[in-house]
Length: 499
Image (cartoon, rainbow, N blue to C red; front, side, top):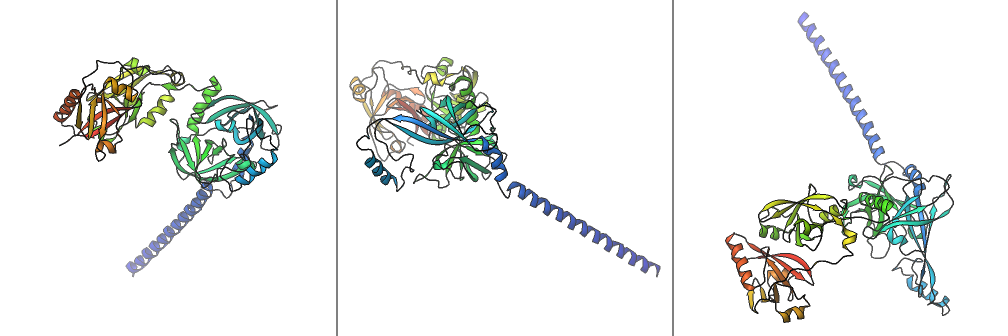
């Protein structure tokens, strides 16, 4: 009887303990559910109004006035490409009364944002370019300055389409800070603010659709977003959910001039560097290496004996810092100032963001190994105003022609130099004709191209080319690297050697 009673007691204790465990699990799950709901609510608030109200006082509308020659068009009244464009053009023609060719004042609208309490304002360069007068209209509210203030231009940068303005106010202005655009993730919520189509202050929301978009320039780094951006939004800020500026709204992709959910904002990490230089110098001061480069493709990497297709291949070294330091055409830049070089775009941006006059270590792949070269950077803006150096010439080779690798090649003569518009000291082999079914044609070679190097060595005769082909074959190479020039512009092309 005692053993049976003890068993019953143990069973009851176990049941009680199990009930307590289940209760604890239910409490824990309930707590987790409540926490999850709180996190979701925090990640996506029910309303963006508190954030918009906090940051909107720093967003401004910009109106520019410019004296232009000739007849006015409908621009500024309706978007370009609008079905009403022809109507407004006819309306303006009827009201010009024969005075359409007189100089007139043209107005344009844009957006911007205040970045300091003393009145510095960021916008797009194209918003204020060639403007005679720039008026800044502030978001209405308590403590805001007069409705409009005249702004002066501190500096502009066409390459990133950024301009820095300055206004003089009676007191400190509400301003916003830049955030780190590199932390913006695809899918993060963002807010665009500005003056779309001249309708006044407006807010739109969306997400980061893509990162690191390149449109046309060497220094492009755009954030793509589906937050509505239209004409007039240019120069306005793109905010993250912390109220920090992660981009400057610059362009849209659209067949009709209106938003279709593909907008681009210049990343803040690019903008801040430009703004700092404009504030300090009134202009940009970008580093300059002094080389022409191209991406390393798989076939180029194989032809050079590289293990992978990364880095920037130097196609030309005009007079400048790189030439003075000893960099050569055919070198592959693999690291710059301690950072691995992914491709040409990455190198151009990194060089441009490096301080002018800084001595940097450049590691290059040359002759089957790596070498480190110390280069003191120049200033790109100065280099763009200077002319390139000339190549050294050699004695003229005898006339000859040969078919190889799908190309009909001829030695460069005085007549060919004149016919092709080449300098008197130009050397190399001329592509006289090309087999349109060949690999060379597929890779863009055309009659009139000048081949100046093969296997990263100069070629001035057909015999030189034969030697380079033989050397590549003996070394087990499957392709031969050619340096081709067209209208003075160089690029490397790797052609497969015949088996």
